[in-house]
Length: 279
View 1 (tube, helix red, strand yellow):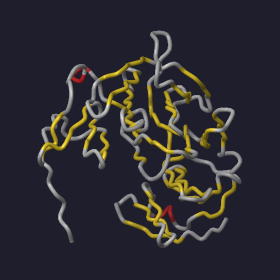
View 2 (view 1 turned 180 degrees about the vertical axis):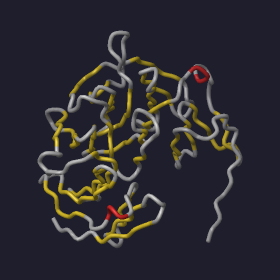
View 3 (view 1 turned 60 degrees about the vertical axis):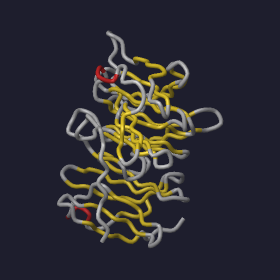
């Protein structure tokens, strides 16, 4: 078995809090600071202006080859940085003294920036001036974005979720409500699913099945979790995995080669399920 490779790094944030690795550019972005490979050492890039004053970020998403965005939960801000330099290009504050707008998650869908904030609002924000272009409020509490198997709960008052950059539907969840949001020719469309699918509980994880309209939903129902395979276009439940309550699954991933699901149980065991559905 191959051994992991240690990479020397001049990184002040220990441990890494929110980061992403850009393999083609060999750049690591840790919250608001990019690091480049100089020789065999990850070294901070660009100016450190503002960085010592930026609070912990609740979102990090790479927009394109030249920019990335972070969001602050406590300070209710969006920040736009350049790549590869990491210079601050712009900064916007969503909240006001009379209206809190703590940002729970950000995502780029079809090259457009979506922002979810406490209070149940999801909106598109301009990457040029930070202004709201579109807004919806499918919940009365803070929504979260879900896509693929990257979601992990966080021991705080909001979900800590790896931000996303996709050209597909995404799932949102808040309390016992959940649904999808996607881009149309006319704008954004929000489709609640909890009542249509007749599923009760809190959405905790989602795995999208590539090249299909299928998604696997992990739903917390009290102290146990149920797992459903759904067709999100037809809004129908196709399969409920058996005996998942016995090991209370969390993260999951889809293995395309064998058409199977790998689930991680509460004691870190791995469980393999066949995906017995056809479209």
